[in-house]
Amino acid sequence: MEAIDVTYGSDTAGLVWGYLLGPEPVRPRALNSAQALAWLNGAGRQPGEFAWLHFNLSHGASEKWLRAYAGLSDEFYETLHQGSRSTRIEVADNALIAVVNDVLHEFNFDASDISTLWVGVAPHLVVSARRTPLQSIERLHQAVRRGEPVRSSVELLVHLLRDQADVLVNIVRTAVERVDAIEDSLLAGRVRAKRADLGNMRRVLVRLQRLLAPEPAALLRLLQRPPGWMSELDTQELRQSSEEFAVVLSDMSSLQERIKLLQEEIAAQVNEETGRSLFVLTIVTVLALPINIIAGLLGMNVGGIPLAQHPHGFWIIAAVVIAFTVVAGALVVRMQNKD
Image (cartoon, rainbow, N blue to C red; front, side, top):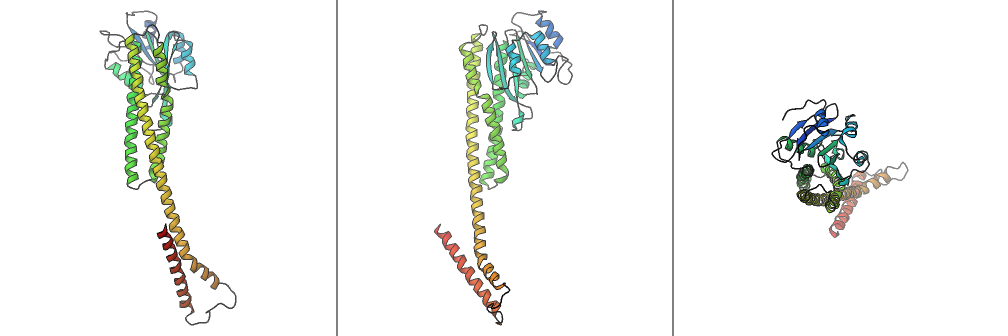
Protein backbone atom coordinates (compact mmCIF):
# COMPACT_ATOMS: atom_id res chain seq x y z
CA MET A 1 0.00 0.00 0.00
CA GLU A 2 1.26 3.47 -0.80
CA ALA A 3 1.96 5.86 2.06
CA ILE A 4 -0.04 9.07 2.54
CA ASP A 5 1.69 12.34 3.34
CA VAL A 6 -0.10 13.97 6.25
CA THR A 7 0.35 17.07 8.33
CA TYR A 8 0.09 16.84 12.12
CA GLY A 9 -1.59 13.44 11.85
CA SER A 10 -4.13 14.38 9.15
CA ASP A 11 -4.33 15.98 5.73
CA THR A 12 -5.92 19.31 4.83
CA ALA A 13 -9.44 17.85 5.16
CA GLY A 14 -8.72 16.39 8.61
CA LEU A 15 -8.49 12.83 7.22
CA VAL A 16 -6.09 10.77 9.35
CA TRP A 17 -6.30 7.72 7.09
CA GLY A 18 -8.58 6.23 4.50
CA TYR A 19 -8.85 2.79 2.88
CA LEU A 20 -10.82 1.02 0.20
CA LEU A 21 -11.88 -2.37 1.51
CA GLY A 22 -14.04 -5.27 0.43
CA PRO A 23 -14.35 -9.04 0.22
CA GLU A 24 -11.42 -11.03 -1.12
CA PRO A 25 -9.66 -10.75 -3.54
CA VAL A 26 -10.02 -6.99 -2.90
CA ARG A 27 -6.94 -5.78 -1.02
CA PRO A 28 -6.89 -2.68 1.18
CA ARG A 29 -5.88 0.43 -0.74
CA ALA A 30 -4.94 3.67 0.98
CA LEU A 31 -6.82 6.89 0.18
CA ASN A 32 -6.27 10.58 0.81
CA SER A 33 -9.15 13.05 0.98
CA ALA A 34 -9.00 13.90 -2.75
CA GLN A 35 -9.05 10.21 -3.74
CA ALA A 36 -11.85 9.55 -1.26
CA LEU A 37 -13.91 12.38 -2.72
CA ALA A 38 -13.42 11.02 -6.23
CA TRP A 39 -14.47 7.55 -5.07
CA LEU A 40 -17.56 8.92 -3.31
CA ASN A 41 -18.50 10.60 -6.57
CA GLY A 42 -18.37 7.19 -8.30
CA ALA A 43 -14.93 7.23 -9.90
CA GLY A 44 -13.55 3.68 -10.08
CA ARG A 45 -16.03 2.19 -7.61
CA GLN A 46 -16.21 -1.60 -7.74
CA PRO A 47 -19.12 -3.85 -6.66
CA GLY A 48 -18.85 -4.94 -3.01
CA GLU A 49 -16.22 -2.30 -2.29
CA PHE A 50 -16.57 0.15 0.61
CA ALA A 51 -14.44 2.98 2.00
CA TRP A 52 -13.26 3.57 5.55
CA LEU A 53 -12.42 7.19 6.36
CA HIS A 54 -11.02 8.15 9.76
CA PHE A 55 -11.09 11.84 10.74
CA ASN A 56 -9.57 13.99 13.45
CA LEU A 57 -12.35 16.21 14.81
CA SER A 58 -9.77 18.53 16.36
CA HIS A 59 -9.01 19.63 12.79
CA GLY A 60 -11.35 22.48 11.88
CA ALA A 61 -11.96 21.20 8.35
CA SER A 62 -13.08 17.68 9.30
CA GLU A 63 -16.76 18.30 10.04
CA LYS A 64 -17.10 20.71 7.13
CA TRP A 65 -15.72 18.09 4.72
CA LEU A 66 -17.99 15.39 6.14
CA ARG A 67 -21.10 17.55 5.88
CA ALA A 68 -20.24 18.51 2.32
CA TYR A 69 -19.25 15.13 0.85
CA ALA A 70 -19.87 12.12 3.14
CA GLY A 71 -23.66 12.04 2.85
CA LEU A 72 -24.20 11.03 6.48
CA SER A 73 -27.49 11.67 8.27
CA ASP A 74 -28.07 14.73 10.44
CA GLU A 75 -28.32 12.45 13.48
CA PHE A 76 -24.61 11.62 13.12
CA TYR A 77 -23.60 15.28 13.43
CA GLU A 78 -26.05 15.81 16.28
CA THR A 79 -24.41 12.89 18.09
CA LEU A 80 -21.01 14.57 17.77
CA HIS A 81 -22.25 17.47 19.90
CA GLN A 82 -24.50 15.65 22.37
CA GLY A 83 -23.62 15.68 26.05
CA SER A 84 -24.40 11.96 26.50
CA ARG A 85 -21.37 9.82 25.65
CA SER A 86 -22.77 6.41 26.63
CA THR A 87 -21.70 3.63 24.28
CA ARG A 88 -24.51 2.71 21.92
CA ILE A 89 -25.38 1.73 18.35
CA GLU A 90 -28.47 3.24 16.73
CA VAL A 91 -30.19 3.09 13.35
CA ALA A 92 -30.71 6.40 11.55
CA ASP A 93 -31.81 6.77 7.91
CA ASN A 94 -31.08 3.09 7.18
CA ALA A 95 -27.50 3.49 8.48
CA LEU A 96 -25.79 2.78 11.78
CA ILE A 97 -24.46 5.36 14.21
CA ALA A 98 -22.10 4.05 16.89
CA VAL A 99 -20.75 5.91 19.90
CA VAL A 100 -17.76 4.00 21.26
CA ASN A 101 -15.86 4.95 24.40
CA ASP A 102 -12.18 4.12 24.36
CA VAL A 103 -8.96 4.93 26.21
CA LEU A 104 -5.89 6.90 25.18
CA HIS A 105 -2.63 5.21 24.19
CA GLU A 106 -0.91 6.18 27.43
CA PHE A 107 -3.74 5.00 29.65
CA ASN A 108 -2.74 5.26 33.31
CA PHE A 109 -6.02 4.66 35.15
CA ASP A 110 -6.99 8.31 35.07
CA ALA A 111 -10.56 9.39 34.30
CA SER A 112 -9.26 11.96 31.81
CA ASP A 113 -7.73 9.11 29.75
CA ILE A 114 -11.19 8.05 28.52
CA SER A 115 -12.44 9.58 25.29
CA THR A 116 -15.11 8.98 22.63
CA LEU A 117 -15.08 7.69 19.07
CA TRP A 118 -18.01 8.28 16.71
CA VAL A 119 -18.69 5.88 13.82
CA GLY A 120 -21.15 6.12 10.95
CA VAL A 121 -21.76 2.88 9.01
CA ALA A 122 -23.50 2.61 5.63
CA PRO A 123 -23.32 -0.22 3.05
CA HIS A 124 -20.58 1.55 1.04
CA LEU A 125 -18.97 3.81 3.65
CA VAL A 126 -17.62 3.78 7.20
CA VAL A 127 -16.70 7.11 8.80
CA SER A 128 -14.94 7.18 12.16
CA ALA A 129 -14.06 10.39 13.98
CA ARG A 130 -12.28 11.21 17.25
CA ARG A 131 -10.65 14.16 18.96
CA THR A 132 -7.70 12.32 20.55
CA PRO A 133 -5.77 9.18 19.46
CA LEU A 134 -7.37 6.05 20.90
CA GLN A 135 -6.23 2.46 21.36
CA SER A 136 -9.05 0.45 19.78
CA ILE A 137 -9.21 2.36 16.51
CA GLU A 138 -5.42 2.16 16.22
CA ARG A 139 -5.61 -1.62 16.68
CA LEU A 140 -8.16 -1.77 13.87
CA HIS A 141 -5.94 0.43 11.71
CA GLN A 142 -2.95 -1.86 12.20
CA ALA A 143 -5.07 -4.91 11.36
CA VAL A 144 -6.21 -3.32 8.10
CA ARG A 145 -2.65 -2.31 7.23
CA ARG A 146 -1.55 -5.91 7.75
CA GLY A 147 -4.08 -6.91 5.12
CA GLU A 148 -6.64 -8.68 7.30
CA PRO A 149 -9.73 -9.28 5.16
CA VAL A 150 -12.80 -7.21 5.99
CA ARG A 151 -15.85 -8.44 4.15
CA SER A 152 -18.30 -5.60 4.82
CA SER A 153 -18.74 -2.27 6.56
CA VAL A 154 -20.56 -3.95 9.45
CA GLU A 155 -17.72 -6.44 9.84
CA LEU A 156 -15.35 -3.49 10.19
CA LEU A 157 -17.55 -2.17 13.03
CA VAL A 158 -17.61 -5.62 14.65
CA HIS A 159 -13.81 -5.76 14.40
CA LEU A 160 -13.65 -2.39 16.15
CA LEU A 161 -15.93 -3.59 18.95
CA ARG A 162 -13.79 -6.70 19.43
CA ASP A 163 -10.66 -4.57 19.52
CA GLN A 164 -12.36 -2.42 22.15
CA ALA A 165 -13.18 -5.55 24.15
CA ASP A 166 -9.53 -6.64 23.90
CA VAL A 167 -8.40 -3.24 25.20
CA LEU A 168 -10.80 -3.52 28.13
CA VAL A 169 -9.56 -7.04 28.87
CA ASN A 170 -6.00 -5.68 29.02
CA ILE A 171 -7.17 -2.90 31.34
CA VAL A 172 -8.83 -5.44 33.62
CA ARG A 173 -5.69 -7.60 33.61
CA THR A 174 -3.50 -4.63 34.46
CA ALA A 175 -5.91 -3.63 37.21
CA VAL A 176 -5.88 -7.18 38.60
CA GLU A 177 -2.06 -7.11 38.71
CA ARG A 178 -2.13 -3.80 40.58
CA VAL A 179 -4.76 -5.08 42.99
CA ASP A 180 -2.68 -8.22 43.60
CA ALA A 181 0.36 -6.06 44.41
CA ILE A 182 -1.71 -3.90 46.77
CA GLU A 183 -3.14 -7.00 48.42
CA ASP A 184 0.39 -8.35 48.97
CA SER A 185 1.39 -5.02 50.47
CA LEU A 186 -1.67 -5.16 52.69
CA LEU A 187 -0.72 -8.59 53.97
CA ALA A 188 2.82 -7.31 54.60
CA GLY A 189 1.45 -4.42 56.65
CA ARG A 190 2.28 -1.63 54.17
CA VAL A 191 -1.08 0.10 53.81
CA ARG A 192 -0.96 3.87 53.77
CA ALA A 193 0.66 4.42 50.37
CA LYS A 194 -1.91 2.23 48.52
CA ARG A 195 -5.28 3.62 49.63
CA ALA A 196 -5.30 6.43 47.05
CA ASP A 197 -4.35 3.99 44.24
CA LEU A 198 -7.29 1.75 45.03
CA GLY A 199 -9.72 4.65 45.17
CA ASN A 200 -8.57 6.09 41.85
CA MET A 201 -8.64 2.66 40.17
CA ARG A 202 -12.16 2.00 41.39
CA ARG A 203 -13.37 5.40 40.15
CA VAL A 204 -11.96 4.75 36.67
CA LEU A 205 -13.46 1.26 36.49
CA VAL A 206 -16.85 2.57 37.62
CA ARG A 207 -16.75 5.25 34.93
CA LEU A 208 -15.74 2.75 32.25
CA GLN A 209 -18.54 0.42 33.26
CA ARG A 210 -21.06 3.26 33.36
CA LEU A 211 -20.08 4.36 29.86
CA LEU A 212 -19.95 0.85 28.42
CA ALA A 213 -22.84 -0.83 30.21
CA PRO A 214 -25.59 0.39 27.83
CA GLU A 215 -23.87 -1.19 24.84
CA PRO A 216 -25.25 -4.76 25.16
CA ALA A 217 -28.80 -3.43 25.47
CA ALA A 218 -28.31 -1.11 22.49
CA LEU A 219 -26.93 -3.99 20.42
CA LEU A 220 -29.87 -6.14 21.39
CA ARG A 221 -32.32 -3.48 20.17
CA LEU A 222 -30.39 -3.22 16.92
CA LEU A 223 -30.32 -6.98 16.40
CA GLN A 224 -34.09 -7.16 16.79
CA ARG A 225 -34.59 -4.71 13.92
CA PRO A 226 -31.44 -4.52 11.77
CA PRO A 227 -31.30 -2.49 8.54
CA GLY A 228 -32.29 -4.43 5.44
CA TRP A 229 -28.81 -4.27 3.90
CA MET A 230 -27.21 -6.12 6.85
CA SER A 231 -26.53 -9.78 6.17
CA GLU A 232 -27.36 -12.60 8.55
CA LEU A 233 -23.63 -13.18 9.13
CA ASP A 234 -23.20 -9.52 10.17
CA THR A 235 -26.08 -9.90 12.61
CA GLN A 236 -24.54 -13.02 14.14
CA GLU A 237 -21.15 -11.32 14.56
CA LEU A 238 -22.76 -8.34 16.27
CA ARG A 239 -24.58 -10.70 18.62
CA GLN A 240 -21.31 -12.45 19.44
CA SER A 241 -19.55 -9.15 20.13
CA SER A 242 -22.42 -8.27 22.49
CA GLU A 243 -21.82 -11.48 24.42
CA GLU A 244 -18.07 -10.76 24.63
CA PHE A 245 -18.79 -7.32 26.03
CA ALA A 246 -21.12 -8.78 28.63
CA VAL A 247 -18.30 -11.06 29.84
CA VAL A 248 -15.84 -8.16 30.05
CA LEU A 249 -18.32 -6.02 31.97
CA SER A 250 -18.97 -8.90 34.36
CA ASP A 251 -15.22 -9.25 35.02
CA MET A 252 -14.98 -5.51 35.57
CA SER A 253 -17.85 -5.61 38.07
CA SER A 254 -16.19 -8.48 39.98
CA LEU A 255 -12.94 -6.52 40.11
CA GLN A 256 -14.78 -3.51 41.53
CA GLU A 257 -16.21 -5.69 44.30
CA ARG A 258 -12.74 -6.99 45.08
CA ILE A 259 -11.35 -3.46 45.25
CA LYS A 260 -14.23 -2.47 47.53
CA LEU A 261 -13.44 -5.35 49.90
CA LEU A 262 -9.76 -4.35 49.94
CA GLN A 263 -10.72 -0.75 50.73
CA GLU A 264 -12.87 -1.94 53.61
CA GLU A 265 -10.02 -4.14 54.89
CA ILE A 266 -7.56 -1.25 54.67
CA ALA A 267 -10.02 1.04 56.46
CA ALA A 268 -10.44 -1.59 59.20
CA GLN A 269 -6.66 -1.88 59.61
CA VAL A 270 -6.27 1.90 59.74
CA ASN A 271 -9.00 2.12 62.38
CA GLU A 272 -7.30 -0.65 64.36
CA GLU A 273 -3.95 1.16 64.19
CA THR A 274 -5.63 4.40 65.22
CA GLY A 275 -7.28 2.69 68.19
CA ARG A 276 -3.98 1.13 69.19
CA SER A 277 -2.24 4.51 69.03
CA LEU A 278 -4.98 6.13 71.12
CA PHE A 279 -4.68 3.32 73.69
CA VAL A 280 -0.92 3.84 73.99
CA LEU A 281 -1.48 7.59 74.33
CA THR A 282 -4.07 6.93 77.04
CA ILE A 283 -1.66 4.69 78.98
CA VAL A 284 1.07 7.33 78.82
CA THR A 285 -1.38 9.98 79.98
CA VAL A 286 -2.59 7.84 82.92
CA LEU A 287 0.95 6.95 83.99
CA ALA A 288 2.00 10.60 83.84
CA LEU A 289 -1.06 11.78 85.79
CA PRO A 290 0.29 11.25 89.37
CA ILE A 291 3.54 13.10 88.77
CA ASN A 292 1.73 15.96 87.05
CA ILE A 293 -0.78 16.35 89.89
CA ILE A 294 1.82 16.16 92.66
CA ALA A 295 4.25 18.44 90.82
CA GLY A 296 1.46 20.94 90.33
CA LEU A 297 0.53 20.92 94.01
CA LEU A 298 4.10 21.21 95.26
CA GLY A 299 4.89 23.95 92.80
CA MET A 300 2.33 26.42 94.18
CA ASN A 301 3.89 29.54 95.70
CA VAL A 302 2.03 29.34 99.02
CA GLY A 303 3.09 28.59 102.54
CA GLY A 304 2.71 25.22 104.23
CA ILE A 305 4.18 23.06 101.44
CA PRO A 306 4.72 19.67 103.18
CA LEU A 307 8.26 18.34 103.53
CA ALA A 308 9.70 21.64 102.27
CA GLN A 309 12.28 21.68 105.09
CA HIS A 310 12.64 17.91 105.50
CA PRO A 311 16.15 16.64 104.55
CA HIS A 312 14.69 13.62 102.67
CA GLY A 313 11.59 15.38 101.33
CA PHE A 314 12.49 14.89 97.66
CA TRP A 315 12.92 11.13 98.03
CA ILE A 316 9.70 10.79 99.98
CA ILE A 317 7.74 12.62 97.26
CA ALA A 318 9.50 10.58 94.57
CA ALA A 319 8.48 7.37 96.36
CA VAL A 320 4.88 8.59 96.57
CA VAL A 321 4.85 9.44 92.84
CA ILE A 322 6.31 6.02 91.95
CA ALA A 323 3.75 4.27 94.14
CA PHE A 324 0.82 6.08 92.52
CA THR A 325 2.28 5.44 89.05
CA VAL A 326 2.62 1.71 89.79
CA VAL A 327 -0.97 1.60 91.05
CA ALA A 328 -2.22 3.42 87.94
CA GLY A 329 -0.23 1.09 85.67
CA ALA A 330 -1.62 -1.96 87.48
CA LEU A 331 -5.16 -0.68 86.99
CA VAL A 332 -4.59 -0.09 83.27
CA VAL A 333 -3.10 -3.58 82.82
CA ARG A 334 -5.99 -5.11 84.74
CA MET A 335 -8.55 -3.32 82.53
CA GLN A 336 -6.68 -4.42 79.40
CA ASN A 337 -6.66 -8.05 80.53
CA LYS A 338 -10.43 -7.88 81.13
CA ASP A 339 -10.93 -6.63 77.56
